[in-house]
Amino acid sequence: MTQQGLNAYRRTEVQSRTPLELVVMLYDGALRFVTSAREAMARKDIRARRDATSRLLAILSQLQSTLDIQQGGEVASSLDALYDYMTERITTAAVTHDPAPLDEVRRLLEMLREAWQSIAQGPTGDAAVAAGAGPSSASPVERAR
Image (cartoon, rainbow, N blue to C red; front, side):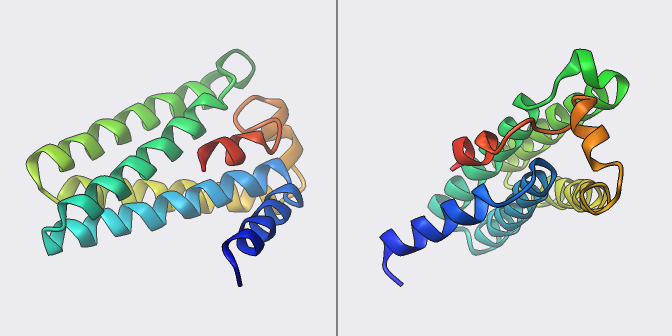
């Protein structure tokens, strides 16, 4: 498949998803990049670690920017604080070359992904979006690329 065809496929995939499915896709990407960063760190591949870390931080930033703190209340505020914490841990891992913070971030991302997947599959999915804890449109995934 050509790069142009692959890009068209990705756009179609994103456009056909619900907002909650897009959140799950962002978590999937974050998990992919935290794994890549950890593997690159083990190989002492600074460029690959930097690239994976940069993409991971961009996804967390995107997730955080879609929160509606006013509407989402305590849930959105807690997610906001957790995204800040994960960003700090990723930065610590990059500065110290210690993979332990990345392992911690991975565990947090896995728990959050599982929770969002459950919400996306359940009948209350629209309530989470309405409460401001999730994205309101497909644009966050597009901007994360």
